[in-house]
Image 1 (cartoon, rainbow, N blue to C red):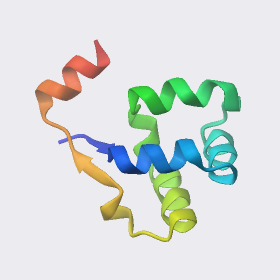
Image 2 (image 1 turned 180 degrees about the horizontal axis):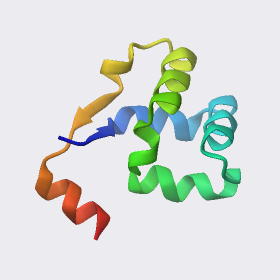
Image 3 (image 1 turned 90 degrees about the vertical axis):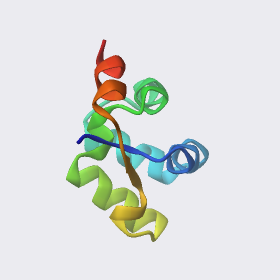
Image 4 (image 1 turned 60 degrees about the horizontal axis):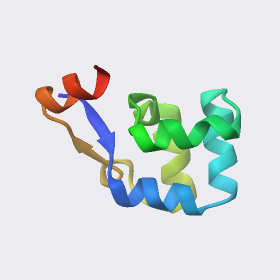
Length: 79
């Protein structure tokens, strides 16, 4: 099943300064594009490089950052 970042992790990223820029760099996007990706909780946020970066910055294990998404939720999110 697909995964997404937990909502509390999204909020922590939205509030942080340094992590915001680090994630934008990891995704190779402009920081002004990151709000859209965060609001959609895009699957790119759960790529290993991003999870490792978020885990290191927030000092939380990777498995506490994500939650499983049902196939129905995943299908509707990409539509």
